[in-house]
Structure formats: C-alpha cells, structure tokens
Length: 330
Image (tube, rainbow, N blue to C red; front, top):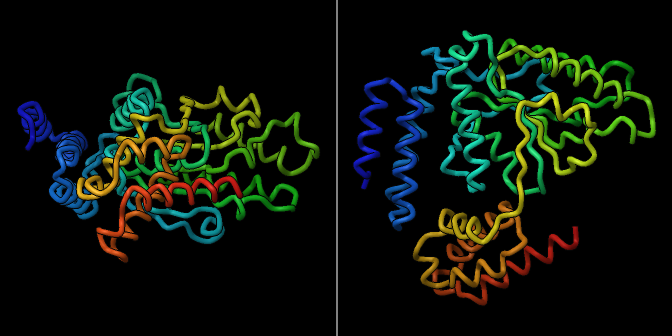
C-alpha cells in the first residue's frame, strides 16, 4: 500500500489543487505495487487514472484551468500531421536516472509556463532526442504529451517533402503556424531527413531550402507548443541545429539494471516462475527497449495460445535468438 510519505504527498497535492502531482504520486504507488508483484492492483490504479484524465482532463497547461482539446488537422495539414492523445506516463518509461530528471524538469517548466514567462523567460520547449532505434525517443515524446495532457502531432515526412520549388517550405510554415494556434507536442521523427548537414548534401535544391527554413522557423517560434526532433543519426545533422534546441537528450541501449526493470514491468511474477530472469538478461544484452518489449509480448502470446506450461527457459531463449537473428538481416 501507499507509504506515509506518499499519503502526505497526495493530501498536499489535493489541498494545493496540484492535479498533475496528485496523478504522479498515484502512479508512483502503482509502480511500487507492481514491483511487489501486485500486478492486477497496479494495473487497475493506472486504468483509473487514465480514465480520469480522459474524462476530466486535469493537467492544466500554462496554469490555466481548462482542458486542451484535440484539434484534428484539416485540409493540407491532414496530410502532414497525425494527431493522437497519448495515455503514457513517466511510469511507463525505463530510462537512465539522468534522462528521467531532465524530462521531469521539462515537464515542471511547462506546467508552470505562465510563471516562467512572467519573469521574461521561456520554458524548455525545443528538444532534440538522439540515439539508436527502439531506445525510447518516440516513447518519450508520447510520455511528455501524456503527462502534460497535450495532443501529440507527428509530422508525416512523406507528406512534407515534395519536388516542387518552395512547396515544402510552405508546408513547413503551416506546421509552425499551427503550433501557435493549437498548443501541443509536435514530433519531427527521423529528423535527419530534413536536418542533414548542408555541407554534405550533393544538391543545392529543396532539402537545403527546407533546412534553412526550419532553422529560421525554429529560431522565430514563440508559441507555447513543444517541438521534439528525434534522430538515429545525430552525426549527420547540420551543426547549426544543435544550438537552436533547449535540451539535447541522448538515448542508449539498456544496461543490465534497465533490462531487469523493463522485464519486471512487462512480465508478471507467474512468468518468472517458469523463466529464469538472469537467463533472460544475459541473452537480451545488446537489444533495444523496443526489442525487449516485443519479446515480452511474444512470450505472453505463446502462453495465451499454448498454455503456461509451454513457456520455459529454452522456449524464451529461442524467442530472443529469433529476434536477434531478424535484426541482423535488416
């Protein structure tokens, strides 16, 4: 059950009407219960909180006591942006403590945006996430949107890049205009597609103009939206980009401790009765968070289809090797 400190924190957040902190403490309680093996109770808590957030949006952005609506992009923007309202929370992330603290700071600054702006300052809104595939970059963008109660707008690069002179830049301007009209989290995934180093590009055409325009738009942006760019290839980015971002967060493959943490989140104690945790960790070394999550899902599917007795160490290792072999072929 909740500790005395957590109970006091819940009471204080209720008195202060700090709904975001109230939800955060509840999720800490859920995480604690999950670690104790009370998976069903932890999941019920999480579902209740997610339901409350959806029915009564309480993360009052910029200290305003109004919910942030989801605005479906229309017209030209409908081909450029995919919109969602993520329910992920910090509890769902398995990342190094340093990254967790930096994300918590970003969340805190954006929850108190008006207070910061009243002193002539701006919150950390422009973020660059770098690291290998499957290591939490896109998930982090979803968690930030979920924690702040903001819609997540994901840019469709196939709808942005065109062969016609000036058209791509005009589309990019529409996206930045929307940031002012509709507060949200705007994710530029696979950012190296438009942020490549200009000195390395062979042509002097549309892509260079797009990058130049992006630099200008990013520099001039005064909206309250968060802009998150994510890339697997930071070495290919133009050097001028780095100083335009408020924070650069690096993601790596999970270490042994993080693999354990992720496995305990994804698998129940009943599964560990049949599979040795240390054996899983040993064989999962070098895999990404996404790979491990996929393997955990496959373990559960095997149990559902074949029964609990069908899962053992040999079967689990076979699933891991299957995933590893697949990665080497692509």
